[in-house]
Length: 388
Image: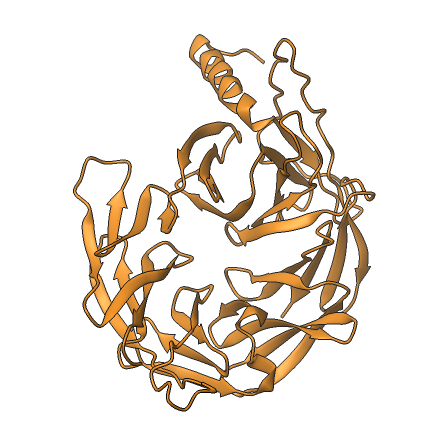
């Protein structure tokens, strides 16, 4: 295969940028025993060895189908060494067919006892290939893709990786108290929340301003489609101002939703106890779920009206919520010595048991809501695919 001078230069530049990441590997995934299809994924390349630095060998991470029931398939990532407990850091659907899963092995590196994160990118449509990106010294809490760039968010650093060849494009500081989306940054300050575009020389937009009665920005989330954001408001005196503000990526104010809830307090004189709630975006970006200590409520982001409300002992822990799609909520709760993953219908209040596992799971709806991927937090070399 002949390369032009410009193509060769581009390749050498990509290799140089990739070295701080520790390399990436092109890996084969086998879901089913079948003839290999022609891959749409670029051919692998390996960076040249730097003097005095030993590069990781390219790892193979095949997926092996262990069991398939009527709606649940269970796969092992057999390329991950079984003697290590792989811990889940985060996972996210990038689109209808691709899933990003970040796991950590916790092994010691030259820098000391640090976490070595491996980002595994699975293409469920191709069902045969994936890439592995190693991010040393990183604890990744979110992955997203914006305009052909993968963003891996660590507590201190944002790693931008090319979606085409998986070379490192750039790193940037991840400011505390901020919610980034590609080049857009929601940042909390003493006056409220501003929207900043880090890629252009434009003025920041003040999207929410604190006042004497309340503050904005203790919780900020971008919608999965990247077109809207939410900012939580916490009233300082009573519950009347608790809610969320919805804005657009252009910095426009769209609506504010009042979500005042019932305060539970053991002190009868404490009339204005702080009302704690946690918002979640629906995977289809059309609604918001609000979870508190006693209920789950969903709201339309088009009108602000409450769509559903469910109360009951099953939902008394905000930490049990895993993901939302329309009126469907995934919950994970302890059940004896195991954990039960449950699908709750907000419109009817009915729930269905999906999965029983030794450890709690993270679970995410696919973008069309037709399937769920679940991964155990302490046994992240196992993936469950649930068809709905």
